Image 1 (spheres, rainbow, N blue to C red):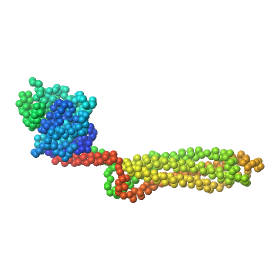
Image 2 (cartoon, rainbow, N blue to C red):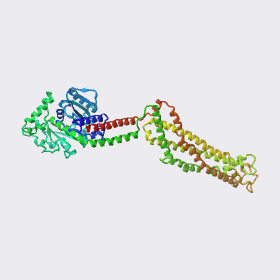
Image 3 (cartoon, helix red, strand yellow):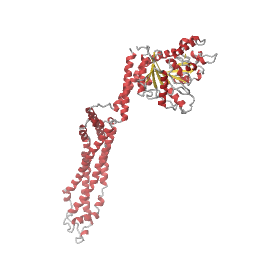
Image 4 (cartoon, rainbow, N blue to C red):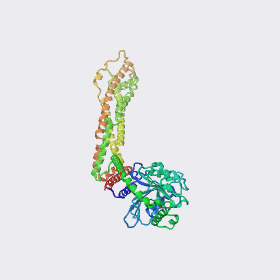
Length: 613
């Protein structure tokens, strides 16, 4: 099994990596499911002036924490203690990785300065932790999280919400089932009113995770003591209460050595008539060993659940990376392959829209089944073939010489001018299908997951696709106009052979040229032309959709990006790289996920290697 302290050291390294990635707990960056939150840790909780800072300094054996009135601790301080075999004591901050502090007064100043850098000098608080590692032969392997002191009133310069903000921050740390709560209460205060015990009772009603610490035993009124508390009669916990005696203000002012203060503390308990029988399990040194052993045991017990959480998160991160797309190779071949692969993915989605796998393609059928027939129906043939207009066209076609049998030139003029009306619906059908295809291109680009990370490539594909659609539209327009022109170029002979060859009986051949035909004769001409136009209309109603589909839809399915493929194949590496210029937000997100994945995999490997040595 792992040696004493190796698991705690492992947790320290993982917590540091989490902090670098912003994946820290306590509601900061990782949330309730972060790796940080799954790691056991000791959260130090106490009200202001409870002696919390002095307890931590006694455990470390160094005077290194900022002091002052009001809220001094405004950010979580993750204090990682590493026991060494000798040598110089020193400290390192995670945010200053290459700087080693041997002067602990400078450590105190850096904590204060870094707090101001993060929170400003407005006495606000921040969830982002300060990570401090101390290496010393006078400490045990242990990780403590010093949290802002609980308070009841906002002081000048602080927002009114500060009281609730601090409680929410502290609660977010102690709420975690893997959190060990170090609840610090001053002896000169009734334990029933202790802020730390009150909060611990709410989140850990059974007391399984709580260690109680009583400070300022030497400041109690004469004739009183805290034996009932220390022996668990006032408030029972599953773990023993520990009493500590901190340095007095006079000792602090005189800069009394912390190791000397530890000896003085032991002397106090050994010589005390009230606490002598408890001296062997009192004091900061005993508290540190007790916490270290318990933290080690909790880490061992939690290893299976930590591994399970890591495995689940690794699977989730890898799935998200697959969705976002993996990093692209740097050589031109890999970049070209990626671009072509993105194009093929887009083309698949586009064809699914056309073929019915996705919505949108049905709108093309709507153009043929509703829009085209409606447009043909609205053509002004009734007005064009009115009695008045037929008389006018026939008369103008005859000129000064009236027709002998049937007004063939008049028929041709009426038919030609009527057929010209079909150009409008034919071109409108081409344009309507073009708009549908353009919209399907837009939808397909938006629906192609692989393309979302490449905004430049999206634009390039859209431009290339729309350029092709414009060519297909022009081909379609020419084709449908040719269909209309073909109908005008050669009239169906059978239609003329069925026409009557004699004029109406009773016709007055002596009437003026502009009134030489009777109304019945003119109505029959208009009716004949209308019948012919109806026949042509039925033909075009079927052939226009065929032409549009052949020239636009089928071509879009077959050759939408063909020219783009040839164009891309001729590009240099620099140009290909520009096309694969990713959305900065997605790049940042993927980089963050890759780093987090590396962290989780590394943590899993380290836990596997350390836990079962």
